[in-house]
Length: 119
Image (cartoon, rainbow, N blue to C red):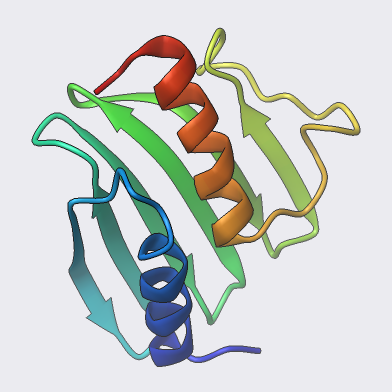
């Protein structure tokens, strides 16, 4: 299992690959968990939370303080997606429940940002 420091490095490294990223901020960090924001604009960001003790991951695209798209797992066995069209619904279809890493999530976000002209 990765440490909080390894997650911080992975998130930072993945985010730096995308041209729309303006800033990467560690919001909170302690030995068991980390919360980071990948800022795309003042009103649009990706929030990533990882709890290494429970193996929980939450990755969300936030627009004007509303979750618009996300992928989550608890104990990283039961992944689900919150689609852009229905962000309050758990998509547990094969596509929605497959494991995903930070870089792939940011690729999905880039597609949404471009398609929806969020920036």
